[in-house]
Length: 442
Ligand code: NAP
Ligand code: HSE
View (cartoon, rainbow, N blue to C red):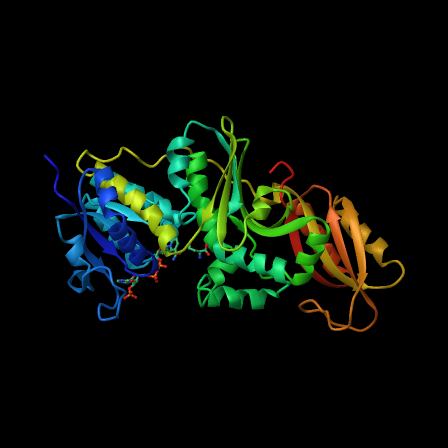
């Protein structure tokens, strides 16, 4: 006997929600054959039901009343694509506790409140799927939870934010300023009106936490991620990097070292030949290093209506397969309580751009400031500075030069002390971008 169609409630009918409706309609016949039963979106919750919507779901299925989904025992699966941690969190918890499986694209909730979500799923005997919360359409969550689960993962590194990758690509290719590239990203619909979560690395930090929690079987929280965004990066940095054979990317990197987890999101120069350097525009890529697999890279569209819907549909199909079989058996795997390594102990090579007085003895003062903090210099490049090329806060008169200092590998805390020492020198007029070089073994 063919089981009856599984009834689904959609929380949100925006960019991703519309994509889910579109892909389900387009590929319905094959999707239902693969699952072995029908899938029916019976209600979609929106903030404003009177808003005109593209064709897709019949108007009578669109509601402003969440009870028509959460209060309906016939709705077995809830797809949360409304976003934010406000009501969405409560709706997810309620759904799970009442035995409805949940599919979500919400990285904010999974990163900040993952433990609570898994506990609610266990309490209700329900499944929670969250493939779309990291990397849009890239199948990375399931790959890590299942296909790579036999590995001891040593490192997760990648380009986890499409907006900043688009901005850095435009700055690299066209020499645009950050402000001009951001305006383009907004016009293309990648960046939101308030792009802070993207520019300041918070979006990438949340995604890194989700992947790191799976990779190292320990709860990783966004507040534990060292975070530096891209706001200080200028066209000059991109151009200097290019001269040295490097491409600038916002990387999320987490590593397991001596039982502790190290997590950081920051701009980094990647060698031009590295596969991550070729990841352009709004694409994402995630690089996994495990003891058995060695290295594996996952690449694809990290956002957008249809790519994200692709991930949601895969999850929805799994939820539908398991809903009458007592669930998929997938549970929280954060059974370790690993310490988090302080950023000060992380070792990197650094690129530092300085504006200094162009006179005798200045280079020696700068070398001394680095040397006092055990920071060994690999190279120094000096260029004359045109009038008007000031760094933020730079003031004073006289001839200036721009110095690009590249260090050998140093501890983060040593570099931080060296920068503080440089700022105290009267001859150092401004410290521009400080950019790490990607690990040599990446
Ligand atoms: P969106 O376009 O802003 O759509 C949000 C939808 O949720 C809208 O239909 C909105 O109703 C509804 N909604 C929001 N708050 C509500 C509330 N309090 N009560 C009832 N309905 C509410 O957002 P989106 O871009 O589709 O993103 C949805 C989720 O997917 C977010 O968690 C996001 O981080 C994640 N995600 C998005 C992408 C992407 O490319 N967009 C990629 C990966 C993950 P109205 O239509 O009436 O305003
Ligand atoms: N704002 C995100 C990005 C998309 O630019 O990658 C949603 O995850």
